[in-house]
Length: 150
Image (cartoon, rainbow, N blue to C red):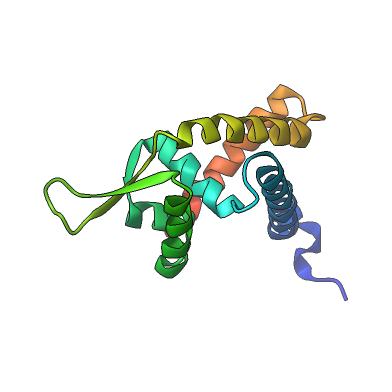
């Protein structure tokens, strides 16, 4: 039975985003484990990348940005601390606020992680012209902004 939305190309958006997200995550997860450390997952990589981009961040800020629960974030951070990749510190003005930053040892890992990201990105976008990639980034950015409060 046909749905009234079958003529609307937008009805495929969620499906396509879901399939692409799973494929990219699987590829990145496999590459991270092979190239960097088998104990790291894509979620660890997300935290490291966020800290690389922001230098220092509140744990709650990273938790909200990544859309994970506090308990999940706690487990992820413990692993990164055990591996010596992040350091936790208290806020300067309010000692109750916990911050994270990359450790000095994490920078070599980030260099390798960027190589993994570059290889995966090139593989993903190899057949798309630059103009299409720019348009894809523009559209995905709009969707990201539209779902900010979800």
